[in-house]
Image 1: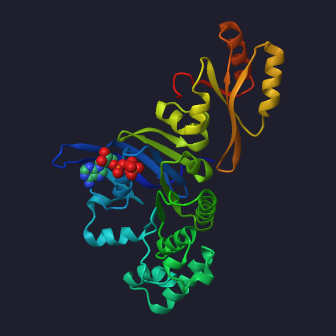
Image 2: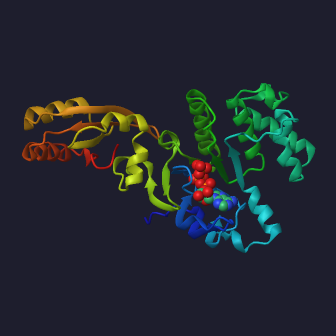
Image 3: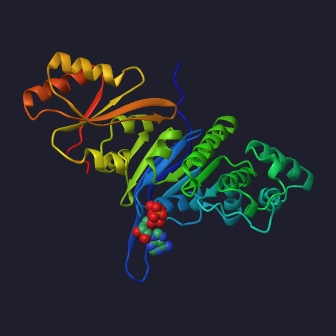
Length: 341
Ligand SMILES: Nc1ncnc2c1ncn2[C@@H]1O[C@H](COP(=O)(O)OP(=O)(O)OP(=O)(O)O)[C@@H](O)[C@H]1O
């Protein structure tokens, strides 16, 4: 039977955005093409100034592209009237780094706010608010004001508010950047649950690869206004092609530890192969001396990967024997010496 290809809910075609402030022209986005499918958790990652916020503002209709198009659920949003745009806006919810809750309103009233604007009757809106408080795990905080909530709780209320009008897409702009690591984990877990329970497509804008690794199915790496690389997170992690992807996969700490010396290789293991035994057997079989410079584990969308940076001897023959051994055991091997540090 023919496999049906997944349906893109967001299609970005040749998108360009140029700002023209008095100080000169800034090309914030240049020739962006991206397909985000229904049900994806799609990470958009890049360094500061790469163009992430501009891209998200083009998707949520706050910024008008200079060229190209954005299709949401098959509709070219640049061709819509104001009235049609309002309807499409309901299908895109958004959460932010600073939560953006209304400080004078209780949690419950914050969630009610978009329902009031949409003209939902009071009884239905109240019922929906109670369901959403339950969904984000805070039914007991209905009457609390934002000032009485922790950062993680504020973000949970913001998520409930963003979901009030049943959007098809949830955009998260650096939504965990103001949170500590354990709160970040709990918010990412909640987003994953929402994606699975409601089938909602989630787009996550972040500068942290760890966020992408934890919950995203796909990622696009933006560098200097263009997409450097995009695809499934697992594939990009195992086989990054561009300098920027390699840089983002190694955290700053890792780079410090592996910056010294020549002949360094990054190797990636999956759950099926144990790093220790493969390395031990490789040393026994090839008689090649290996220096382990760095090793850690990463959990990518629920699958554990080990990565190591090893240093091989300068003697080319032994080094190539070792590389051949690793590759023949289906282990990803790439030289990092020129790229890292
Ligand atoms: N309204 C604007 N007017 C002029 N230039 C702008 C405007 N908005 C963004 N830019 C410029 O466009 C480029 C991309 O900015 P953008 O905010 O999209 O990057 P970013 O990847 O989100 O960065 P950060 O992670 O620091 O928020 C930057 O050079 C920025 O200075």
